[in-house]
Length: 270
Image (cartoon, rainbow, N blue to C red; front, side, top):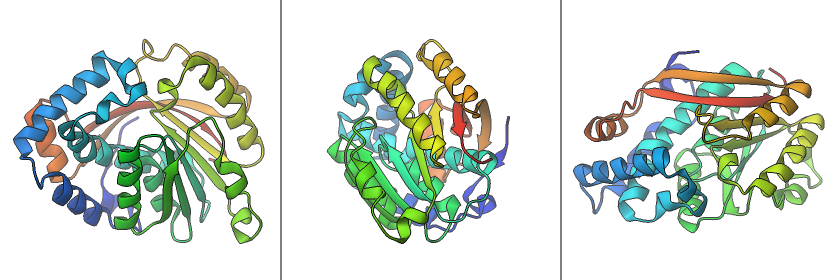
């Protein structure tokens, strides 16, 4: 599938431009665009050639890579996720979005924005820098969100998110954006039945991963389980409209910032 998409055409009720401006102000304060572009080339190599390092968050091990991730990958992840939930998810009204392995918060933020006013957002990650970036993203995007330490498999969010009160009547949405592949095999095996159980209880579940089958040998088994539970699997090749800084960094690093590819598993109304 393919589509042109940008913040305006998606009609997202959040401050996307303010978020990008905040990212530029903070990450280009002590670095030039050329320096960030060099770091982006190294980061891209990490993603393509040495994905095993990502389990230890090698993507965040230098200031340059952190800036490159925040300014290049995060905006593109936001726009891609916004496109996916627009096409996969039936209109739902406000959601309780839980971003498992949230990184800098882009995927969960995009879903919360698309779901509209009244939605809440919780991001879980293990990396201190990523957690702070997610918190900053939620603030500047004007979302009712929080980020804290946690993993995709320990399920520490469940008692809090299922507390008594009005929040329990709001449908839940779980997103795992390019994180399942970073888990250990036993952790990933334990996670799948948890996701299926949440979907059976009424949650929406979105799993996003790269298209490359070589890096995700577990994908066919997950696909069979999700399809058997009434879900679907899709592959995507999108044309997006990234913000100017993201486009400039991609051009300098020899990357096409306008192309976004991936594959998804979806469970829920749609």
